[in-house]
Image 1 (cartoon, rainbow, N blue to C red):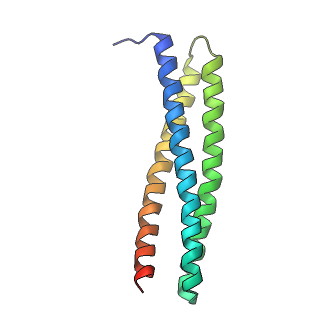
Image 2 (image 1 turned 120 degrees about the vertical axis):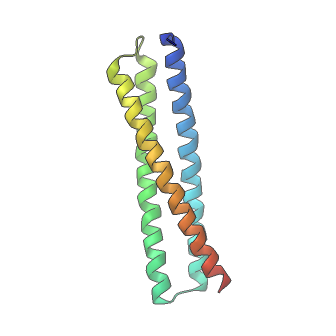
Image 3 (image 1 turned 135 degrees about the horizontal axis):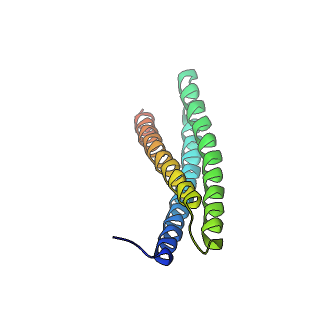
Length: 126
């Protein structure tokens, strides 16, 4: 089925809007993870625990940097799609590449979320 260019442009803009919302939610969740980690650190300061906590803190900082970069990329892609009257292959390829990067990031963050919540559960019980 062939789509009209106008509807394809709207679909790309809609997808970029969804990405922006998702990334902003992850940014907020990442911030809350840092807060939770600080609270758990107040209760436990063994060397082994501190090493794990430092690894998580570094991961959270790294995720913040990647999130901000991806949000900038989404804004740039949005601007590119908005200014194009006709979507060319370069624009569509850039959009697909960004889609892949965001999907990869979301999967990676979901794994971090799982590992961190398990870490919290283990250390809040003790």
